Length: 239
Image (cartoon, rainbow, N blue to C red):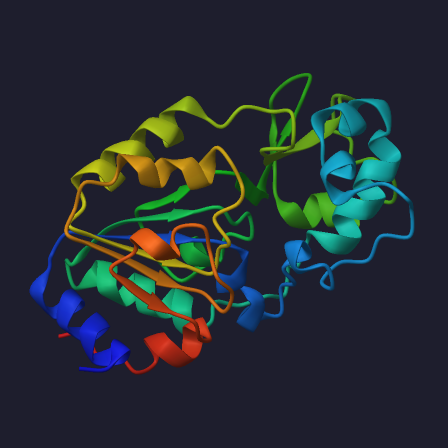
């Protein structure tokens, strides 16, 4: 049995599936994976991790937003075959949760209801002074640092480096992973912690990894498919 047939069989026979997705899941939506080393533009000598850190946001807010608006706000991106597959799998009753490291909001846009955005979303932004909500378009259109009507600085609801993951999201993700029968990891190198470390809680039957490159979990996975995500999922039928 080939790998596509094995994946099809796992999905057909299980009704407690969890998807765990990373940046590679959205590249088909023309959102670059900055960890690939060729996806994002950075004219400074600073690392992406430093620019996208809480400390840099506080101390260099203008420069932070110059980089953020240029490289992180892909407001015209649309869900691809992968996002639509996950939403359809949820609608069939087989998928219990989609846990994502992505901040692009495309799983939600594809109508996947139970999406846990571990690293937040570009579509949620809050005033640091009064907590008023703003959408991504408002931040994008700001000529300089986006400011609230009260004068406070608006911060994207994205987990920056040096910041903790939301405890509620973390606990929910652990619960779904622990109780899942099948976990399908797609489009992530599994190198970003603490998110990647969540797989240690998995106690189910089948761990599937779909990623173009090798990951540190390949040796313990039950099925590894090194291929394009959309190419793989387009061949899977949801009954």
